[in-house]
Length: 350
Image (tube, rainbow, N blue to C red; front, side, top):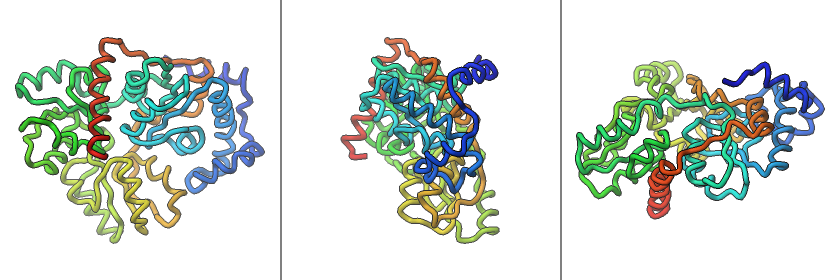
């Protein structure tokens, strides 16, 4: 368990991390990407950490991969690559860096290690897990195979290395429907997100899609009733849902798509008012790039994603820990499932 007090004392021995308005002004180009959502006083607090992290990245030939759910100071201040799970998985194979710092949750760091076994992969907080990934085990996959003999298993990338290794192919929210449609079987098993599976089943009616009973604690909280009440209060708002939301929520929305799909949709459509039914840092991270859009509505935070902070990223690079490792036999099988997803996505042009 990381001792925050000890970490702060040791960092203070090596770095000047006091709030610094002059440094904040020197990093104005970074701040311009988030000044709509990060107050100047907060940026003066963040700036010393951002400067120190970016300096350590150069010294250690490190790259920061940040998921779209990271806070703005991470997303805009220190990330070299941002994106959804598929984008980060692919970029993990392309980077020439010696060190990958995964600003996301643990399964993402495992995926980076699986795809880049020769690189050092760090995660700033090993407690950054995922309720969805933890809802299934390799034994659960075996249970589904026994129930539906011969059916291929398509597992969401939001799973552990062991579950990926027990699966035939992986998918993300952006390619799930196409991956399922491409399977050479009438019945397809999807794990672990039941809502993603149910939404995919409607997109791919030619397949009998069966699923594991798992869900994301962020997306399952949205309801169609809440959307209806919000539309009554704020008519004209464009409602945009992630496909991890229940089907009734997707039906009540104007658009549903992956995190990348959501960003592309809002950037293209530029609605006057938009409500994103996903983790609320999404809106914060694209707000400055879309000043004409007023992001309104609920803010459901992922407690696991929010375990990743600038302070912990600095500590991780300073100590080169915690390092993520995956058993090589497990990694080899998991790598096959992830690589098949990447190869099929490219083949399908997605």
